[in-house]
Length: 378
Image 1 (cartoon, rainbow, N blue to C red):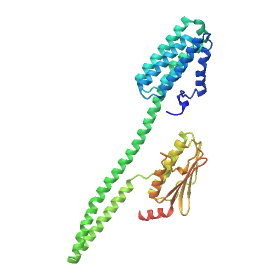
Image 2 (cartoon, rainbow, N blue to C red; image 1 turned 60 degrees about the vertical axis):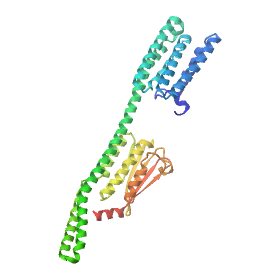
Image 3 (cartoon, rainbow, N blue to C red; image 1 turned 120 degrees about the vertical axis):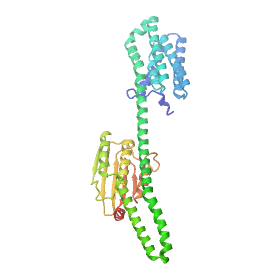
Image 4 (tube, rainbow, N blue to C red; image 1 turned 30 degrees about the vertical axis):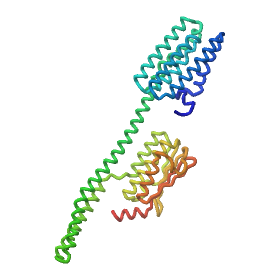
């Protein structure tokens, strides 16, 4: 379940030290009693309360959680009536706010408020001098008991929904890519399947006719050439229809992402990198997208510098942040996407180098000689 101090309720307004005060303060109320029996009862109740809280935190079964929370509510009532200490209600309220089941939350929440208010009212009738001096603190405690569980419950619900939305968006992206691959596969099958079969049949026929009827064999070879040219033209048209990722467009989205994350972005060099073939630019764009996503999500930094550089031998793209850094050149970082970047770059004979330390620097290199080959093939 985490470290031992994780059992303390976590909230951006209240630190662990506040909760330590809540743990120590009841003993001040307990030791005001003159009777050793009352002091012993008070200490025993506090120990039972902390044990119940620990067991409710570690329990994975909803029934056990509700049982231990019920014990906490009962102990809170007894502490209120015997010692005038009502502030355990806030401690319990924070735990109730973390109950995920809506039905269980509302039942325990309603019972907690009813018993807490009932115990306070009964305390005023039993010993008004004990409760009246702290009436303003009691009112604040009741207000916190009413509002804090709702705040935590809906905040946890919002966090859960945001996580589900992010997962859904990632799944949609994966399905979109899969659908595009299947579409390309179907188009290639439709374009090449029949024509390659025809080329194979005509090649066999030309092989049989080459000695028996050379003119007919020559005609079959011309048909084969024409069919191959047609197939090549249709494949090129298909490739031209596939949308290529542009570095300039990706850079615009990158600037928007860093602005939303409130991180400083510096861009050096020209992102056009000359006349880069579509496949090279697409690979570099996808690598840039993955790199800046890692910076925003995982670096913990405040600034990033993106550098574009073109040399006679290679295109170089570097992404450097001032975050927490990365160990072992990112080879053991789960979910970082670096493996996918390396696989993409290997496809175009490129490379990825990762430097850790104070921040992380990713350097992407693609040889220029490969881009010339791609141009010639196109």
